[in-house]
Image 1 (cartoon, rainbow, N blue to C red):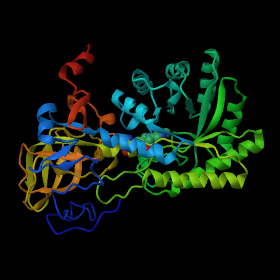
Image 2 (cartoon, helix red, strand yellow):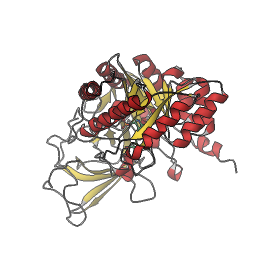
Image 3 (spheres, protein in one colour):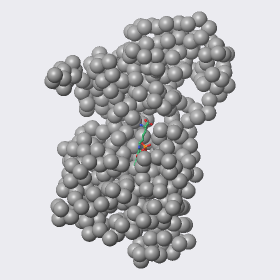
Image 4 (tube, rainbow, N blue to C red):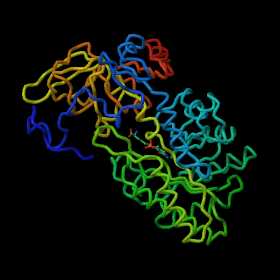
Length: 463
Ligand code: LLP
């Protein structure tokens, strides 16, 4: 991600690598709509508010740390994807980004489908009333029990990820007297420009079946022979937090050329292609994400053009956005505990959460923004590192940012764009109690996932 050159201000060349932080913002109290959800604003008194409720009230009622999700923003983003792709396509929200029963109900109401990748996500989806036929089941190593459950409840499709799974799913479906609709996940050999751990279309990795060397064509051959399977399409997911459309376009082109090969060899035109998720969002003001309608247009055009060239009927397209729907809709609210200024270097600001509620900074070197949320300030900006309360120095929430220099213990600070892969990847490290998720809308706030308690922790400890 691009970062501008060093600003004037506290730094130490040996410690702070060139280009790792931006200049202080022109107005440190401003809330950039790129990174904050749509109902976030400041009250006349200066506190950040969401859905018409200010954070001091939210902190009093729900405590900190806590995730606050802007329900209107979530529904609007879900709807924007739905509308952009229209009736001829399907949008599957990727539950791994964040899933709870309220989320499932919102998705259902907004007309989206759901991608799950474990028995736990499937159970959550079903328990909140998502119709099974609107669920897709993913994963590179689904257990027999998970496959049995998915087939017997009648999920819309299962995405087959390996040669073994082709046989396993077919066998289980036959035993249950069913014919399961399936897609085959292929790796198209694209190098997505994102962090190595979240790039998934190059061949040297665990997911999918390579297009190269005819592996995917062989998988199709085998799947078409099995009575328990109804092969309906091909799936590709190239990675996550991607800004460059080129990777998606290459993937679409290669998937369509596989459809043409299948038609030539077997005389069947598979009716569906799924191009996965992966669209990037703004974590800082430097990021410029694509809008759903731009993505829909680019993908629709390329698939149509390639299909026309190959003499194929245009298949139904599916996409699986996770982060791009839920990521920007939530922020994490923390209370400042201790402040440690290091002269000429930076100031460490410790908050009451950390890597247990946001592992992304430690794991992917992710960048986040942060704002003083309980008040505004006219003080000079200071370079800070926001850190957690865990027992390791890699416990960083925001690596480099600016906060007002009169910041004090007890102030509330908020980290925006934490809706995706924060609560869903939260841990109990150091026996931290995972924070609640609170939905806010039209002046009302309600807990959708409650805060963990010490009792919850001890209930599992049966030794
Ligand atoms: N479809 C499939 C098959 C996937 O594997 C994923 C994400 C998605 C859709 C949704 O991707 P999204 O639109 O959310 O980028 N924990 C990492 C992200 C891992 C993504 C895994 N798969 C992070 O925090 O950045």
